[in-house]
Structures are given as structure tokens and as C-alpha cells.
Length: 261
Image 1: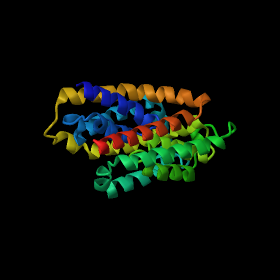
Image 2: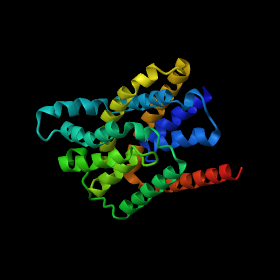
Image 3: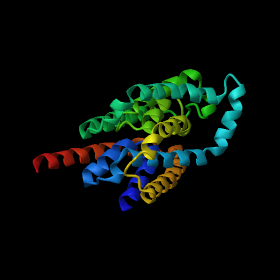
């Protein structure tokens, strides 16, 4: 139960903060030697369902407004649907391969490379950038969607790579983050439905542990969304880049300790 709650909190925070939830969910059990039900695919699905709940609750008013734009050619709903296609197609085509990508060394590389991109875009960031998600065009949505597809690799971070892509296209940090979260909703929902059979058919399912992890993930996910959007109004991505470097260094130390035992 303790491990489930901790991993739920980590999932909720790391899914929306640009630090990669997949990296943390792979590294924490590896680092602390956690095994069993909390290290199963079914439990991972439960945690992602928690973050989906956080997205739906926080952006409930936005989604009502967005769905009303479906009768307009320039409606935001079409940008979100187009942006969803690259990650959706990539996930369907390479699902089995992606599930087996769990190398700590690969995570070290992806953590660092995205951190470098964060620092690079911050150096050229301009406060006069485009402000609202309503300014996003189909071309912008497609580019950000392609960036989101790379987040299927552990360590990249869905929010991290899409926020970076948005800033590179000239959007302010908060607008980039907001569109990132809206864009992630169909993908998280689709992945949860796709993997639901693993949760239902899991021989290790323990409802109290799964529910605890889901609730922890949903609550902390909601908090992470709320405060990251506030944080990015006046702060840069650099603290997250530095954290990614620190985590990569900690993983290298962990690998070294493991290899020298």
C-alpha cells in the first residue's frame, strides 16, 4: 500500500511536470528493489487512469468550450485531433516494442537531451510570444503532435517535449503547457482504454492497492497541473532541466553501484 501511494504521487507529479513519469516509474522500483503488484503493467494502467481523471476534472470547462468549436473549421478541437494523430499512430504501430524499452542508460540519455533543449529554448524565449491556445494553427498542432510522439520513449516527458515545441513555435510557456495538457487528454484516454484489458485480466489485481494508487495519482496530478500553469507565468523551465540532469546523475550512480556489487 505504501509503495502504491508513493508511485501514485510520483505518477501524478511527473506526468505533468516536465520530468518524465515513465522514467520515474521505471527507476523507482529498480532503485529501491520494489517488485510484485506495483511493478506490473496493470498497476501502471491504474496510475494513468488517475492522471486522466485529473485532466478531465481540471479542464472540464475548457473541454465543454472546445467541443462547441467542432462546427468551425478553425475550431481548437481539430487542432487537438490532428496533434493526437502522430502519437496515436506511433503507439499503435510500436506498442509492443515501446513496452520493453526500460533501459536506465537510455533514460539517462533522454533526460539529458530534453534538458538541453529546455535550456536552449529558454535562451531565446521572448515575453512577446503568442499568448493563448486559440492562436495555435493546424501546422503548429501537427508539429507539437510529432514532438508528443517522441514522448513514448521513457525519459523524454510528454509535457516536457510538447512545451518545448510550443515555445520553439513562438508561444508563451503557459500557453504551451495548457495546449500540452489538452493535447495529452485523448492520448492518455486512448492508452488507458487500450490497456484496460491488461488491468481487467491481471492475475495480480488487488483492488485496494490499485484504488489507492489511482486516487494518489489523480489528486497529485490535479495539483501539478494547477501549480505548473501558475509557475510558468513567471518562471522558466530551467529548474526542471537541472532536476533532469540531477536525476540522470543519480541513475548513473545507481548503475555504478549495481555493477560494482
